[in-house]
Length: 264
Image 1 (cartoon, rainbow, N blue to C red):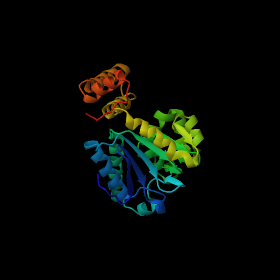
Image 2 (image 1 turned 120 degrees about the horizontal axis):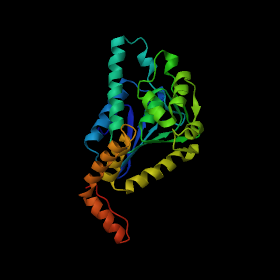
Image 3 (image 1 turned 60 degrees about the horizontal axis):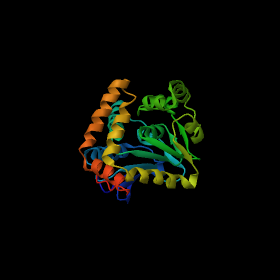
């Protein structure tokens, strides 16, 4: 993880809490090739070494747009080979985001379009400001969602609803996203980050190894049948039995005090 990225702003606001801001407000926080490189480096490095980070908040710069999707100005007149090469980069960046063991909360502070909606869906859960809107508009551009949109959206809202959203390209509100099960909470515009920070700090207080293992198991839940999922869960559970944090958690409960987890 680099201390500075060209397209991302990183703020370690607490010991265990990192805020990542999409930082291209002049371009609607759209994803260009450099942002793809920055994303790939950030999420890959955090997969290898969590650096004591127990929760991440992902948001966008400004108060109007969360992320506008792919940078169409950069993509204008790209050759087929250039387009495919860029998308290969975006694919690896998307996979590395979803494979990051640290919980990622998406704070959608404004409009999310195309890949912006897909980025939100790739996070563990979503809080949205009242002004936030979503849309997967790729069919209006002669393409289709290519950032896990056809995979993550139906898992969030159901296949039939996802078909309507993707095939029409029509925008929908934060409240609709909440009612359909895509968004966890709709917040007052000025209270979005405060609400997200409260949840993130609660996560940071819990045993980090437990959180990482629980996330892996939860991600498997929709991929396999019930009993294979249970087998994965038990494997993840058993990895925690020998940890110092497991001993500390039980000891703190019996001593009626707050546990001091170390991630060991």
